[in-house]
Image (cartoon, rainbow, N blue to C red):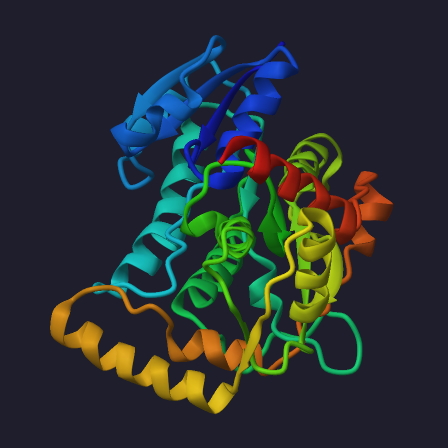
Length: 328
């Protein structure tokens, strides 16, 4: 049994990670920011610490007695009224956490990044060694890339740092913007989601949340310090995704393909309105630009070096749909 610190413990991945660690007999020190979500991880074996990753003293205190850290917390919005938050939380906050971990004599830290920093695929799947794209689609991706570069520049040997890069995560769990894929599936089943962006043929990589949790645990156990590992699932198109949802749910609603040029127009309008109102836009131009590219990804490194074994999309979506129907 170990004592393990988890940041971002009330996020989509964080909640499932905390549950798995407790089920495995470990004690978890869980960092959370929102009282409204704390109940999601209030269980035997979990000690709650309110705070955030910008407060080094809070981090150091919460890590006392722990030997391992999972850093899952991030500012993962697609838009922010204050764009500096991406760098503050994702770069400064991560370095703050690593400093606190070193002072608390933590042995190893697994840091959650994103496969988005690897860029879209062209002729072959992207992997951990793919060239850095000329630019990133979002400030979130940009900040995560900077974060990884800063971690590589750290010279001290302890704590050991391993990075994981999940793709598009879906599955059972708290339905929020961070679990957008499952939320979309739920809306489709309820008849409240009726469109597919573009022609629906562009490819993306979708990974079941429990596979992502398994990938984190494997990275902690077997990952090489200083390395990163893509945690992906299966490459499918939006059209295939909804075919799987139809089959699993028995719900067959007509879906309308929305032209990309119309989505660009709408995104531009929403962006203008956001500047006026300060309210988040429904869609942003960067999201639409991503729809015009393929995002085919290889998890070969994690499979071969960690023993990572993700399920296919059909099985994962079956499980997700069954959970949505049973619980919502």
